[in-house]
Length: 69
Image 1 (cartoon, rainbow, N blue to C red):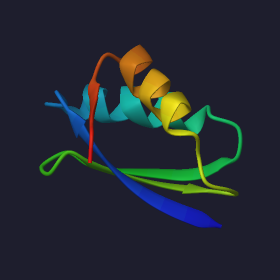
Image 2: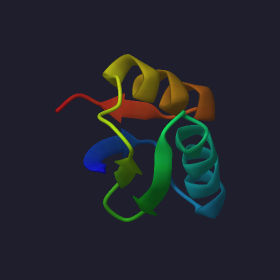
Image 3: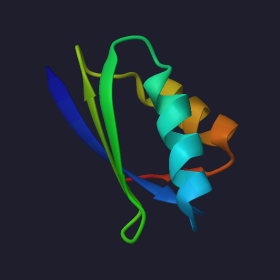
Image 4: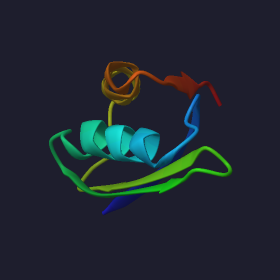
């Protein structure tokens, strides 16, 4: 199991949290997604490390911006 923390910009409400969670949760191998709306941090548990382009594409699809670390 791998845990990664991402910073997502643009989330302002519960719907934002749901959208990001659904898109990231749809990535193959993802087991759990936890979103902290106040900080913009998204924690993802997955079977193996995720490709950053895949994560970025999922966040973009949800309508938000993945902040580069």
